Image 1 (tube, helix red, strand yellow):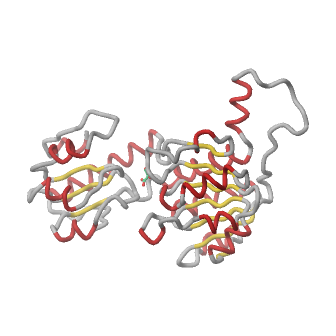
Image 2 (cartoon, rainbow, N blue to C red):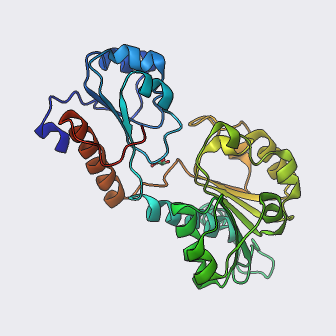
Image 3 (cartoon, rainbow, N blue to C red):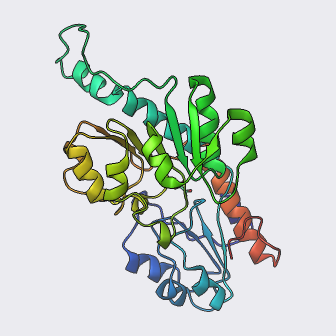
Length: 302
Ligand code: DGY
């Protein structure tokens, strides 16, 4: 491990997040802690580490799990891993778009379970992507990379973002529109905003009701951006289809979701390629080592 070159490392050898009490006990006296998005970095966490703590390096680009004000109050630096997971996450958004639009998982199950009895004209009909309208909610790095991939599909792009995105507008004739206009016009709505309290349930029952019948909702950002119970109801009424990589109460899913055929469910795989996770590990190590050497970390968030 790169960080081992300059420090004594206490490495939790587990793939399943240990109980919080165990994490809090283990971090006492640490100078730096590598956190996952499932670790809540708040006052109790920072107190458990104690005065020795100088840096919290999040193994993720999203940092909604970190209370930045609490870190600043204790002069603890926080860092993340921006940029390196953009393309991998855009790929997973497209894996979900394709699987959801063309009913790939339903088809696979049908064949595997021996239920396929031969070709017929109305079998598992899906959504035509060519010429469809893709709505990108949040045209930052990942939203832009997701939109860029739509070029080969001849899609029309709508997007929301606090500022105009000249790359999308020039290269793809994308149009920036208000969220409700996008929701009503898009055949596919793909979410790419960071999670902040004001984005909780950005896609609520009212917005789900405004989506076109048969439209697809794709979420590779953060679960709480969608009101998952409202989505369940919309999916149960068969008005929409959805592709989800993230969940409101991860890793718990709203009961009923796994029983529906019109939703594709992934276990938060956005950044999950060997190359991307390797780059994220290197960034985390470089962020920690920089702070411990009294240098500015390459990717600070506080
Ligand atoms: C992130 O980095 O925020 C992703 O959700 C996990 O890689």
